[in-house]
Image 1 (cartoon, rainbow, N blue to C red):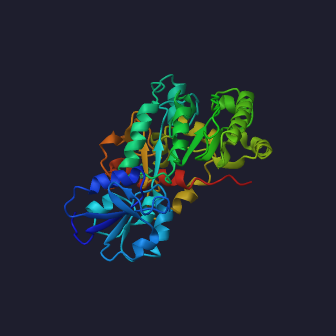
Image 2: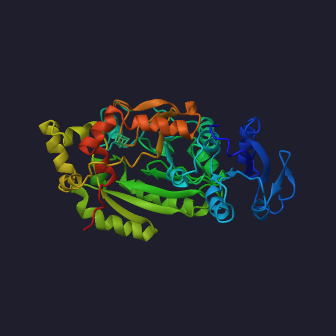
Image 3: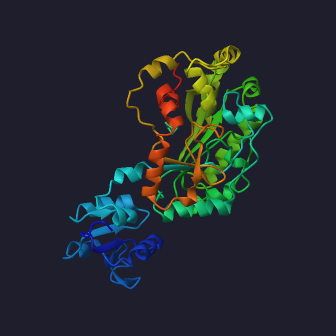
Length: 418
Ligand code: SF4
């Protein structure tokens, strides 16, 4: 600890996190844990880890208190409550207390998100997506997926080391189709049990239904992605049976309803030149099922292709093909609005692939330079993650991305409005 002004500490929270925090601090000679705190009146006045448990009114009267460290999944709410009654610094994660003698930036913690690609492959043949292109060339990714046990290990590692909190959203998809993972439901059930916020996106080609009441309790957004609203459009992009997809979407929605889902169900419609006349039908379909309809311009979901397109190095035949499928007239104007000091919007997002390694971001497929950054289990704490992320964002791939506007295009890809 660099600063000795935080000697007398109260740990707020008497559950698992409280114990972890206690174990991290108890042997530090410069720290004196004077008590625990908890909002639960049934716990107040009793002992936890050999220390008295106090309530908010007791804390106000503590003479020698130097700081409070919150060790609870409800850190945001507790922080809001405590900041109005105590004058001492409040830390929402213990590493800040141990390493950096500054007041915690709670906004930083709130902005953190994670993407864990639980399936390392996809079965769709999207023409302008890196994964779909490999599938079309029969060169698809090995059918890798993250097992339930591996997922749990990674999740617990992130939580126990205060890299992620339960209120930070975990997206269970990036390049892969999550429901191709045979452990997908187990993973979702686990996250709901942990009260961990998560989101999922599917092409609805595989139907995996749950029979448990609370499976989707913590699911914030459930997205169905569609490349059009006809068999013709499906033949051109995903390659699935269109009627079956519609049936599967209905069955998924029924299942969500019976399994505790209270989040937002979305139909993400990818607008191509050839499916413009299907937008209204898709919108009606969404409305009939209570789905939020989000039509977005389809774009090049492949770093290499986007780089070629934006640097005017795309081979002519390919460019002609792109021009036949995608709507691109808005792109030049969009990129002309990119500020010189544009900050990558994925700065606070940790990407983890099916093997448990850190990936650069959602823009970069596995063939891109700087794609992989080692096992996530090597991360020891949030500070280390921030240091690595800083280094990542200065890599050659990121520099090129910012110069050409590859990420900017994807982040600000407009909604189709007609
Ligand atoms: S700058 Fe571009 S390549 Fe780098 S993380 Fe952001 S989106 Fe990805």
